[in-house]
Image (cartoon, rainbow, N blue to C red; front, side, top):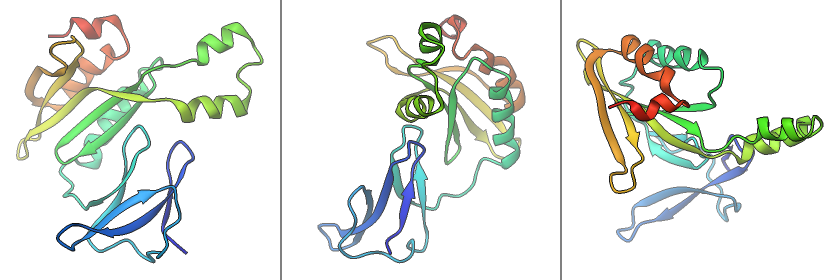
Amino acid sequence: MSITYTNRKGVTYHLHQGTTKKGNPRYYFSKKKPEIALKTIPDGYEIHEIPNGQVFLRKIQPKLITDQEQAVIKKALNKQSHLDALVDIKKNTITIHTVDQNFGPLLKELSPFALKPGLQDVLNRSRTYTPVMRFTLVDEENRDFIVERFNFRGSIDDWMFLDGDDSLPRLAAKYIPHLGKESFYDLY
């Protein structure tokens, strides 16, 4: 029995082990079943899924973002009922990804029967997400963060600083309400 992981889209991946050019072990996930099944996740590694459903085996990272800080972001996002967003945490950064397309309201308007449970599941699994805002821990002692938004101006596609050296609850309350709205593009 191999190690498997089913991502948020319902796709099952199997853990494989290969070797690098130097002969070191290399781990990766594939939809194909491995010839030689790994029975356990290697010590020091964890399974990580990014918002668009890609699955990786990565070295266990130190936990720099607290559960309370994660809850602050999730609470602020839950207040935005119009928003479909996922959160990804890597090292000292909390990144918010929003859905690229949401066909649910359009289908509901076109046909009241279009959103049957099976169709809604298919739509949910096919969604893709784009990183739009991130909060980075810059002072571990005082728990101060900076906030950046992604700049979508063709020639600049990069993160743009908005505010910083402040508490996460204040930054989240000030900036998360702009996600999914036109006012997001007025943030500088």
